[in-house]
Amino acid sequence: RDITGDLTAGLVHCISDRRRRNGRDCMQLANTGKLRFPTDLSAINELAYVDVSGITYLEGDIAALACMHGLRIVDMSETKMSGDIAVFEGLHMVEAILFFGSGMRGIVGDVAVFGKGRGRY
Image (cartoon, rainbow, N blue to C red; front, side, top):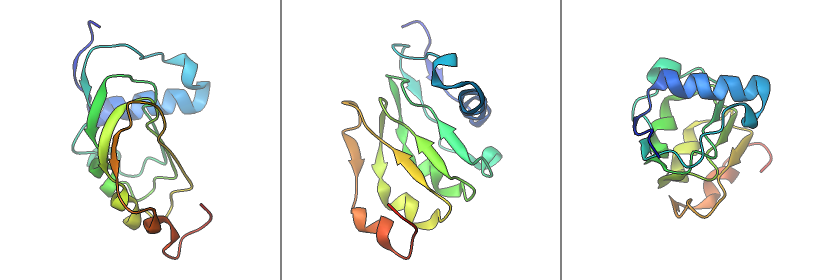
């Protein structure tokens, strides 16, 4: 647990891109120290794929995703992320959202947000 600190938008991009091209196992980040998800993702707002799954002690608010209008897939499984799923109401390109694992207790909101004129869920 020696790795701690704040992730940058650029690092989220790097992790996600590598995992998209090479699979999640190419970057094993489970059981690091406490890491914090960026509050500002505007530098990578056109990114279509965000995968920070399995970063066991990653904390932050999913509200940071609000600026990511090109987002199609988000995987934050097995993290300690929190926030209201209402953030996805304005993200019309999203096709898949993966939030599972025992640490995902801080996700709240009404699932009706996914049925408002959206594709299949």
